[in-house]
Length: 564
Image 1 (cartoon, rainbow, N blue to C red):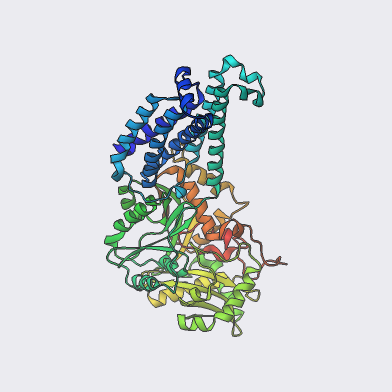
Image 2 (image 1 turned 90 degrees about the vertical axis):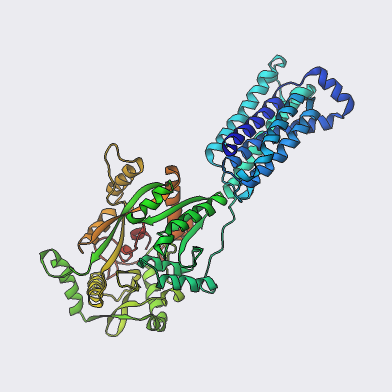
């Protein structure tokens, strides 16, 4: 009962101190107190009691989050408030009430187990507004309590003659200024976060080993090698969960990787770790197979789009439906384009040539290189994977990094770039060649990635976020080619599968989605980054879905068309 009852009691104690500071002291008690202590001690006690009242309101929020530091601070503030209640007006009733609350708080230490520091605690806007309402109420109560003095008709400096009213006004003003300072500080404060594990960390070796031996390998899990993730390993060391941190958002990317039997354990540990740091947590880009575990954890789930996968067993360029695709593919062939897939060692040898091609591509596209949900051109990262190349007269004019799986269940591509010398429709050529290559290699499917906001319902009784997402999908073509991306992938006849985001509360999902976009784009500066130079004309390799069409292949990630 402690995490439910004690926050309410501590909040009431804080409210009592604010009300007491806003109302006149008992004259007889005050005269007796004034004979024992100087006026400065009484005034300081009165002012400090008001600040303690405000802090207890905020500590009540920390107690509701079961933060251990809030328990310690509350116990200390209650004890100090009980002492100051005697020094500001011999209010022994307040002292007794605060002492009772202190005695109830003291033995409940184990109920407040979270290790987050008070400086890392996220005080929600609703709680700050509530505290502001209490402080404003204290001002109103002060003016009402001293209405017989007509203080609302007097200037501030004239009130100094009435010491009691001056003390109350100073106390209310001090609480208001303290609340404003806390609110401003919260805008800039950031919580402590775990370190990023890079390729020079011994644990990165563990990541590669787990990827190679996962029960149900997923091409997208290769993003673990990008070097910008935090990792949570299972107790057996055979599984990991990767996540990113931005501000107070901790966002797991996809399902845990490794042993299927350890997924739920890792998800619970991730939630508990984020909870211990008072973080806003979520799991992004998950498929239907993980939903039972997330429901068991009590998380709210929201659909964010649909992911496409082409079954390679049935893929063919024949048929009337593939006529345009087949014609584009053959035209590029007739221009002399060749296709090959090189292994990681050969990719490493080609890094200078690929880097020059990537830099050329970036001159035509806003936003620059990405991270978190998609790979950027980091030579070490690119050299981790096989690479599909399109050559013209021996020179590489387009390339794509390939994510493969050990069991050949599926493969996908991550980074995809082409240069100004690439022929028109080079992307269609590259896709078809990759599909035929995967088919010949025995892969089961080629994953085309996600179409953001596709498949959301707009029915009257559908979830509010789904209806908003559907509206954006239908009306947002001016800033993102949602429907064009879906149509482009549809021409490969893929199987569509829903993708979701999960969080403890529905209201936190929009904030998590915004942070996913910022993590992927390198922050607000990355979103606003413009091309290195304006493009005189559309690049030769562009597709009909828009100038950023090379980025259509981001498995389980939103925003690729506009950010890549």
